[in-house]
Amino acid sequence: MRIDPQNGEVTEIARNLAIGYPAAEGMPPSYVLTGVGVSPSGAIYVSADRATALYKITPQQAAGH
Image (tube, rainbow, N blue to C red; front, side):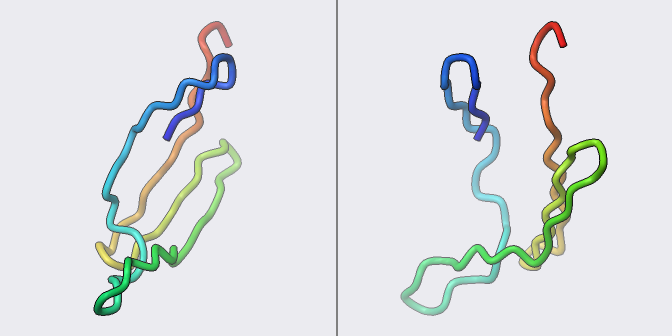
């Protein structure tokens, strides 16, 4: 989700990422992250064991900055 701090507008930017452990029978997925890190640039890295994936979330600069 992206939330505009100026007007509070919420925009979905990703859905159904394979993050966390699979659900136990009859239960929702746990979505436990296996690792989170933040770089000096402000990028957030999230590792996902389910898909052997690494997701990078980067900060977006506001217009005019």
